[in-house]
Image (cartoon, rainbow, N blue to C red; front, top):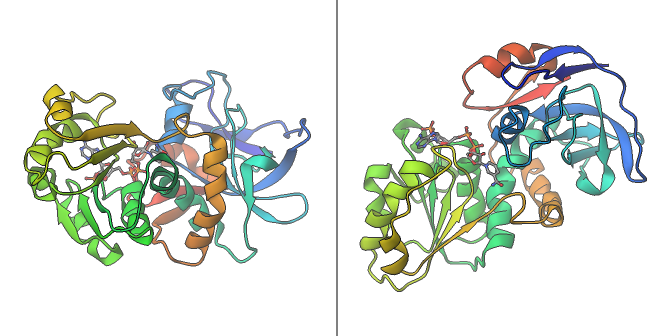
Length: 309
Ligand SMILES: NC(=O)c1ccc[n+]([C@@H]2O[C@H](COP(=O)([O-])OP(=O)(O)OC[C@H]3O[C@@H](n4cnc5c(N)ncnc54)[C@H](OP(=O)(O)O)[C@@H]3O)[C@@H](O)[C@H]2O)c1
């Protein structure tokens, strides 16, 4: 079969011949891949940098995708750490890490949405308590995950969603998706009275936002839960100690490890249904898998790239 193959961590995948996959365990099955998305997680694992990267080469990247199982049914599947990912004509999935999809769904939309959508979905459902009526600030709201977080927070009953980012043109698109306000990082103090921060950026923009946000709070003893989800602006952030003493700030992380695979998988069907029914806006661009070497090197598109074998 044809697949995208990485033989060195500093080079893009090459499209070429790969041995046919073989299912081994009781729950494994060989499936046809219909749509396999390129996320930051996919790139990080393929570069050997992510904490969950397996370190095995050669490697077929791709951590998830929409597949057709041997009985002809569509599934969205998340792969465990493996040297054979979803960037291939066929792969092996563990049925327990997949959910069945209705026949009519668009595989490209579902594939594009699930990883970025799941980031805020599980954070709000499983990592913190999120009663209706909360006020939410989203840092990095202009990216795929942030745009979906705006919509998901509203869907889960947020009273107010404030979308923050650096790209003012992209911020202007977010009120149509449910954002009540948009702010640049320089204006962050205007979001002082939120209850929850969903942080996709970390690094300097997050650290630099903490004190302006906290010191402008009307009641500093009111709880502020800062959910660390992504680190696109920096792996580390210099959190001022005074931020933790002078206000009721709690910082929690949400991602693989802080939540079990079972927690993620339990939430997949409802998110897939929401996306399939058109309840969540998704920006996706399908690209033939044969063109992966070029697409991998190009600057990241605004839309989520989804490879179609
Ligand atoms: N923990 C989880 O479960 C989970 C799941 C999915 C994603 N993530 C993580 O969440 C982050 C965002 O993912 P995504 O899919 O939304 O990525 P994306 O579509 O590429 O969007 C990236 C976002 O980050 C912003 N950004 C990039 N560099 C920045 C900087 N130096 N300062 C401020 N903002 C910056 C971008 O702003 P512009 O629009 O201005 O470029 C954009 O809003 C990534 O770190 C990803 O790994 C975590």
